[in-house]
Picture: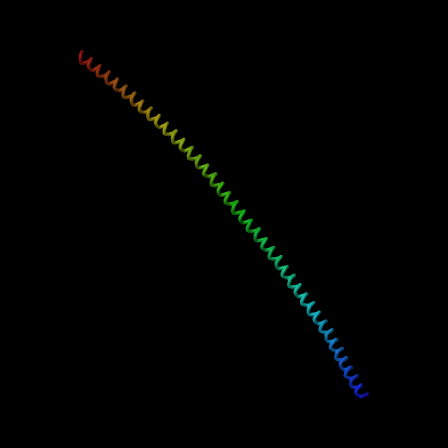
Length: 147
């Protein structure tokens, strides 16, 4: 019986030793699992932080590009407005020039008509004087023949 007890005691000791080893293994595995979990958590946090940094950079780039686009659109709009204003000014100036030229043309036409009337009047006066002179000469010739 002592042997039997010794065997039982040895078995219990072996079981307890194995149990301790298993508990130690469990503690070690838990520690490793926690390390892996912490490492994964850190890697996830780094990845999230990196992604957030990239998102911030991309948002800044988008914002900068949007501002440049708006600036270009504003400059284009301003350029178009200036071109339209310049064209409008030129149209106004050309209309004023056309109006002035029309007035000058009308004035010259009137002046030419007046000069033409004057020339006609002078010609008619000259014709009348010549006719009077011719009549006077005829009268003189007839008077001279009648004498």
